[in-house]
Length: 287
Ligand code: NDP
Image (tube, rainbow, N blue to C red):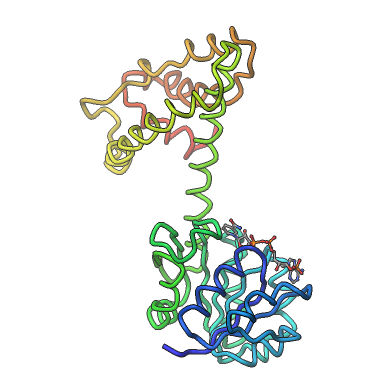
């Protein structure tokens, strides 16, 4: 349990990750490019290193929580020899391709590599609702799972280092489109004098209840048969009324137009009687 841990990058997230590690009594070394950010963690028991090199040499396990892929390479590429034989857990947000490239770089250098995607904001770190996704070295994931579990619920997706990032970005795409849908609704009711706060009171339970539909859609998509009985058809899902009502309110129809186009493409291809889940095919196979 007393494995030495180094955290590189003391932004909002790196600080939260380091605090959880210190709290579990791991000897912890921290480093940040600009000085001053380590002070609070030193007060909690961490050792501040003057350089990233010194920080790496202090620990078997190195956590990188920097801004982006470029900053990770800027800091770590010159320290390949120091990292060799150690464990690198990179929780910096990157694309799947960047994660795979980092894994390949680590493999060539003899660094055991695990990539992570953090599905949480800093104040959630350490709570079970904080979810962190991992891919890359299975050995690292299993050996250091007690350490990873200090940050929240840890899930492993496989040896392909790009999978955690792919999953992370896919989940974020769902979040952003849902947020845009909520804000579209708020804009629709605003001209009627309804505040966004009032609208949120109705939207939150509604959208929460609607997530119950994911599993049904998923079964249809995975089964590959969009004619299965009991589904809401694409024709029934025509969004003209929503588009018209939005335009009547004098607001942009851009958010809803996107969904309407995905539906229309399937109707035009002769699938109007099939289920709404079929817009998966519009997305999967771009026009
Ligand atoms: P911050 O903006 O708070 O911190 C960025 C950190 O990166 C700082 O420590 C900064 O150092 C460092 N940094 C930036 N560029 C360089 C560089 N070229 N060389 C060395 N260090 C550099 O970001 P967060 O802590 O919030 O985020 C860190 C990572 O965690 C990101 O990849 C982010 O996407 C991810 N994440 C964050 C979440 C959040 O809610 N905050 C949620 C999920 C993921 P300096 O102090 O010197 O500028």
